[in-house]
Image (cartoon, rainbow, N blue to C red; front, top):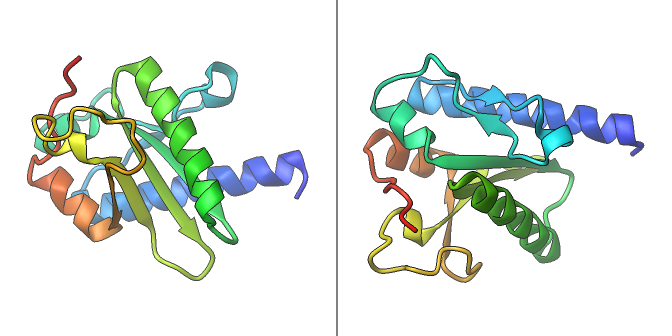
Length: 149
């Protein structure tokens, strides 16, 4: 796929995930239109968003990947990208990904749920890969903890 086609598929994946998450939590994240220029994460919280769901989502740097196939190597590279971007923003990394003909999965560090038990948040072995409904439940229930330094 050429550069423009790849960017279009990426943008479509971001919109698709934002809609799917909105169906689960009642709040839609916005595409970060500065991401390619500034190297930031894909989805951001709209400025006018308030409430407990907004508070949980405000702690997350969401990176979205939509590809035909997902391999162990691509997941490792995407997680590395998500953690770099989250570190720069001072947020928890979240990787939402979906291969063709499969549901969305969401990876986040276990430290986002229990920083007292998992102080090393960027270790790919200390993550949870969840189906979207489980991730949405954590967001709705306020299970995401503030990130301490």
